[in-house]
Length: 414
Image (cartoon, rainbow, N blue to C red; front, side, top):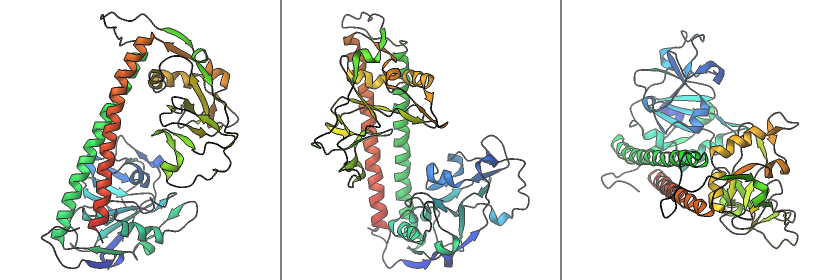
């Protein structure tokens, strides 16, 4: 796939022939802060998690180097410039090793490339600003970088190995057209992310107001509903302990914090490792709730998700329960509200491991939950579900944009 105005073969050179590597530092997070400083620093973890492909310092939150760190000996040559490529040289995931960003704007600020990074600078003006950011996302280069990476648990790549990879690129004018197209698509994706964040914030705030009874609903006659009862979860819910004894169900579910209940084989697109050992798994049916009662400090309240995809089985590590009365959709929103999270954190118990908390079955089903009138439950569920559905639509649009970008990267680069 090429723009119609351009023809001819692309040039191919090894990275080491057209780029020089500059000195980086090894400052850890403890040496950085987000409040004050004269020099900013790019940590490899931020390349993996948050920085855009085309790095514009005015659009990114970048930590400062602490004032007590002496940076006077650092040569001007080693400060980042527009057109520089910064690689994260280490990752536990093969897909992320050598992940990179291109610096397109430092806004006159002092910026250094830090821990576990490689800083590459083109030797001459053979690249349009921003082109390399996308070039290093192409399948050809990603595959080469992955092949040159080393390690078992932690994969890494060094200057010697990354210098061997081959770069194919057109003339600067064609590079500019490619960069303009892909950067516009990136801007659209960033806008889409903001739309999703807006609706997520909206539903979060509305849930909190509703479940703290600061926002009340009315019936058909515009009369406010009565005050809610508070009951124990166990009064309207029962634990599900039906096991897959005859191995009649082969579909294995998981509970994902990002996606809710998922079919493992569809989601991961591969065979389930324990497919022949699921006779002890719990059978889960539509509208059942699933919770992981063993949670970590980093995520002190795990997700409680409602199963919307049919019948399957879940690992016995999960707690599966079903409502005997009440609207499943209403309680799905309640279990995703801050009111629920705060209570869960307040009753969590630390076990033998200091980094992990758990809940006993009895304490779980003794938790206080609201019991509004049935009609109010339905109204609240309908209202919040409209917003939740809107979020899923917007996520679908983002997914399509991501697919479009992936397709263009596959078709526009050799």
